[in-house]
Amino acid sequence: MFIGFDSIVTTGEKAQNPQRSIPISIVVSVLICFVVYFGVSAALTLMVPYYQIHPDSPFLQAFLHVGWGPARYVVAVGILCALSSRLLNTDLPCFG
Image (cartoon, rainbow, N blue to C red; front, side, top):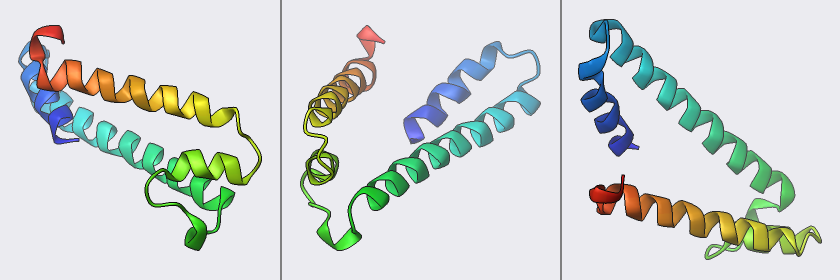
């Protein structure tokens, strides 16, 4: 999340009014992160009781728990894409 702040500030050099646009963009990015995090945690908790959530792979096991076996493969591919994107854009900036 802090890496996103860094990209907002570095691209803020090109903004027309950086005193206004940088704080707005930071607040909007924090709100987007909150909504996504809240939605994901609410969905997980509504799928499986909190005391039955598997600590190593919560979403994969949650989809098995509710009987959506094939959906766990979609989630696994999404996880791999997200991790690969993070690796290429953050740890190896020449690809970003």
